[in-house]
Image 1 (cartoon, rainbow, N blue to C red):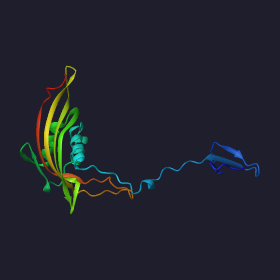
Image 2: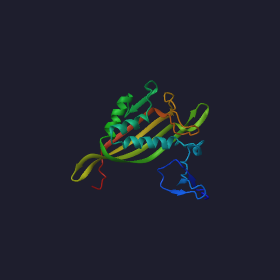
Image 3: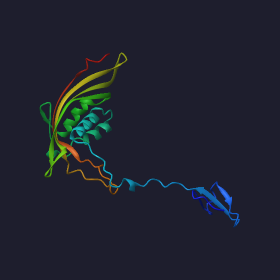
Amino acid sequence: MTIPRHLYALPRLQSMLIKGHDPCTRRRIFLVPLVPRPPSYSKFVNMAIVLPQLGPWAESHIQTITQATTQESFNEAFDAFVTKDESHLEITFNGVSVTRDEYKARLKGEAFDEAGASVQYNGIATVPGKDGNVTSNFIGEAGIFYTAIIAEGIVIRDAPVERRLTSSINISVKNDPTIHKPATLPGIRGFFDPRRAFKINQVVANVPNTTSST
């Protein structure tokens, strides 16, 4: 009996369902289809995950903070945006110098405890920074003007109460030396992003949204 290439004999596996006999030796054999090997991570070796440049990075983090609807998601979004190195951190909010914790509390008051939010970017300008002696589009200075419509968790006459948050924010972003690269699979790059904002100057106007269709 010739065993097809896509099958192989496992005489000791009594639990297999495909059974037969070899007519030459009259020995019972158990046949199972060859199972394809699971894909190996080796095919991804030397694959680089491309990190966003400064402009998209800043927009993404601002949107994540603004749209956070739980304490946990807000904390994660804030920590991924603002450095924890307070000795090198400068924050001005509505013209007043504030600490990291004060800034976090004010952002939480502006865009938290909500049912949802939409963010529209009205303009962004970036200036590349220096990574050592190399000019990099991934760090530097960014100025962003945006509007967020925030739906509160309060409903009046079957419609959520909405607020319009208009803001201008200037940030200085660089690689944070206090963030250490975690262990990764060999050859896979790009999962590590140590960039954080070290200087923040933000102006925020938060008013009821009077342009709602409701």
